[in-house]
Length: 97
Image 1 (cartoon, rainbow, N blue to C red):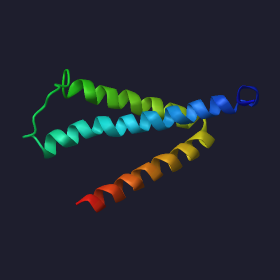
Image 2: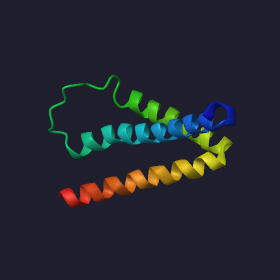
Image 3: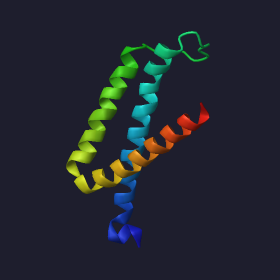
Image 4: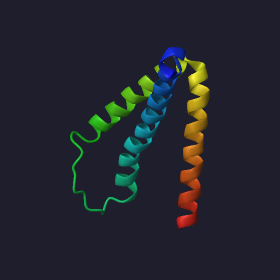
């Protein structure tokens, strides 16, 4: 019944918006981690750093803006989910120190 009502497409777009937003945060973490902890061993070298991660962040941001700009109701749900994830991460980091 999800395919017939169109709810499946909405769920897929919603999860894509959240996945792209989470990927943006992870990619931004590359820059933050290298700045705050330059002494850590790096078992994996990021190819063409800092250009490739910066380009990827820009492209992901454009994809996210396109998704949320064309479907505002999707944006409201995704913003709520992303805000909840951010809040959970903030509490988790605050309690671990």
